[in-house]
Image (cartoon, rainbow over all chains, first blue to last red; front, side, top):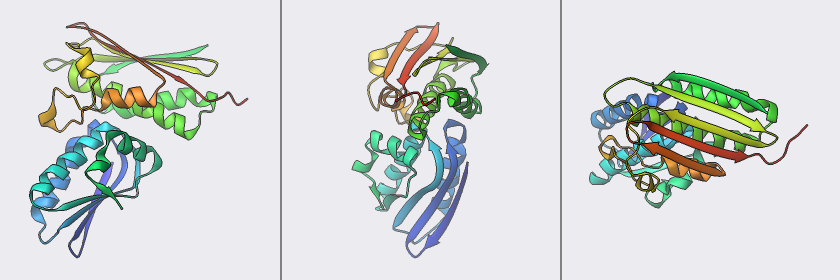
Length: 102
Length: 141
């Protein structure tokens, strides 16, 4: 499991790669929260899942947790390019009712 | 009939081991990528439940068994931990006893949706047994 980020204008991109399960949950959460804390001037956060080969419902909890936090600050969240496996979990969770896919 | 049984520590690093083991074991059935992905995700959810909830103040094991007969795959994930006090509630979408840890409460919902059958048995302080069945589309010789 690996996460990187990139800032482009007022967009902050997180690139999730590998397999996201409970074992990596804390590391991923801590990394994303640290970048969110340390960055300024962003109004949109994108979770890119193009290289995320596996994710179970642990990932839903992580994304929803970040969404709730960012919503309070008026920052938009997006999910980008999920793989088919991951998309099934995302759809089942109903996460797209609050977070748009781009 | 073909079967496998493993017992491992209820540690989060074993979640990927459990998924990979089941995927490898089922390869002779030539499952579709979609079926394999569904099964791996369901196994991951069941094992994660045991890792997260079964042994809050102690350490313990998780038992994973899998067998198939023709195209019907059975998977049992079992622990000997604290058990589930209200299974009906636990099975409800978004219900979690650990909401403050940002858990989605979707584990059993994923298992139930991705597999064809899901049975959960539990007794307080005796553990939890999750039995899942998936019927693969066809046997490709």
